[in-house]
Image (cartoon, rainbow, N blue to C red):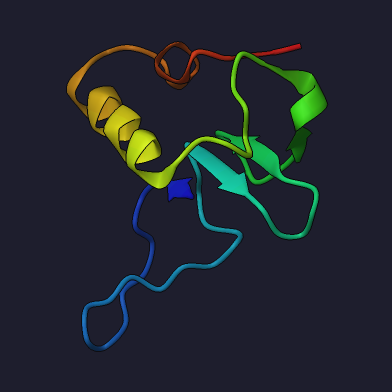
Length: 86
């Protein structure tokens, strides 16, 4: 799951995503193990460094709802997702 600016669109207008695109938050399941990117493509933050958010169990609808909350408020991603990096 990825949230960040749209960098490129194809001929049909579809978003063309590249792993190096700017990111606000991204939860990757590949390559394993699951990990998080926060405001940058590096570093890969493992579950062990994240307190308060289970990267495996967060669903896409919950992820999107929190992104909508972020877009409508001044609250931080960490606050809306309820986690901190340790």
